[in-house]
Every structure is written in C-alpha cells, then in structure tokens.
Image (cartoon, rainbow, N blue to C red; front, top):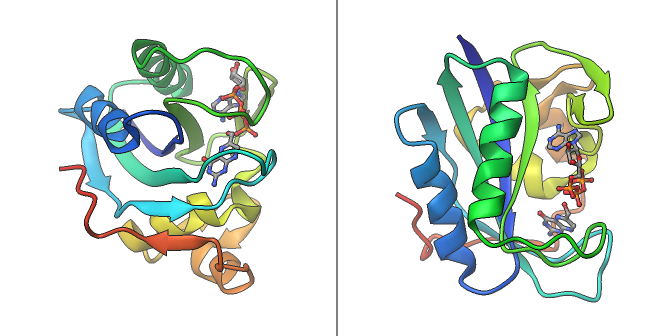
Length: 160
Ligand SMILES: Nc1ncnc2c1ncn2[C@@H]1O[C@H](COP(=O)(O)OP(=O)(O)OP(=O)(O)O)[C@@H](O)[C@H]1O
Ligand SMILES: Nc1nc2c(c(=O)[nH]1)N=C(CO)CN2
C-alpha cells in the first residue's frame, strides 16, 4: 500500500474532459482531488495554457504501478509524443510516492522538476497544507518563494 501525489495537466482539446478522464481512471484509489488551475506554459512557452491539478492517491501499488497507470491514461487520451514539454492531451507525472527515491531515468522520484513548478506545488498545497517534498522541505515554503503570476484558480472547472 503506498500513497502517491500525481500532477495532471492538459493543453490540447477538451482540457477539462481529459483531466476528468484521469480522475475517473483513479476511481477507487483517490484520496484528494485539488482545484483546477489555468497555467501559463513553462518550458516551451509558445503553446496554449494548461489546466493543471493534483491528485493524491492511495492503493496497493508500488511506484512503478502508479507510473504505469498514469501512462495508460495518457495513452487512452490519444496522446501523441511529439516534442519534449510540448502540447499534450494529458500528462500524468508521479511527484512523490511516500518517501521513495529513485534515480532510474524512467521513474525519477521525487519528480526532479516538482520543487520549482507552481503548476504542481500550488494545487498540492490546497489538498495537503502540511505536505513535504522529500529533499526540498515544506510545500508551503516552496510556494512562498515562487512567482505565481501565471497561475489562476478556475473554480468554474470541476473534476468531481
Ligand atoms: N516521476 C515521473 N513521473 C512521470 N514520468 C517520469 C517520471 N520520472 C521519469 N519519467 C519518465 O519521463 C518520460 C517522459 O515523460 P514526459 O514526456 O511526460 O515528460 P514531460 O512531462 O514532457 O517532462 P517532465 O518530466 O519535465 O514533466 C517517461 O517516459 C517517463 O518514464
Ligand atoms: N503550465 C504548464 N506548462 C507545462 C506543463 C504543465 O503541466 N503546465 N507541462 C509540460 C510538460 O510536462 C510543459 N509545460
């Protein structure tokens, strides 16, 4: 039994619909679903805005099981891998799995970009105010040091 934090994102097509597909795909293991945020793209900036959210899940899987489940949902969304950090129907990143650390390139844990991404940390803080990102400290402290200008809460977009 493990508890994982997953970051979900979409910036192609029916963005909210793809995020809902991810939520539905984790039915039965969901602990929390964060609010949805409209976020300016980082990495490759000449692409449409994303919708991002965070899921906390708990179930009888190890870290690879969470990765596989997320990738199956990405595939089911019709995602085509064209470009690193490019547009996508659905992205599911494994942010943390308990205190597990992994340096396998196929599953880096904690996720190496999470500590500097408002798109991950802001929704995570909403659902786990006391969360700690292993190796980086309290999520609340990390959020306090970030530029949040490109991150807008969308309470009109409901995932559950
Ligand atoms: N913690 C992780 N969560 C999800 N995928 C991971 C993780 N660590 C490594 N990977 C690997 O990353 C590979 C590429 O994933 P993807 O194309 O979604 O990257 P990205 O989302 O564009 O960039 P980033 O990983 O910086 O968010 C996948 O094949 C997956 O095996
Ligand atoms: N705002 C935002 N930008 C991104 C995102 C994302 O989820 N949100 N994901 C990316 C590739 O993983 C690249 N850029």
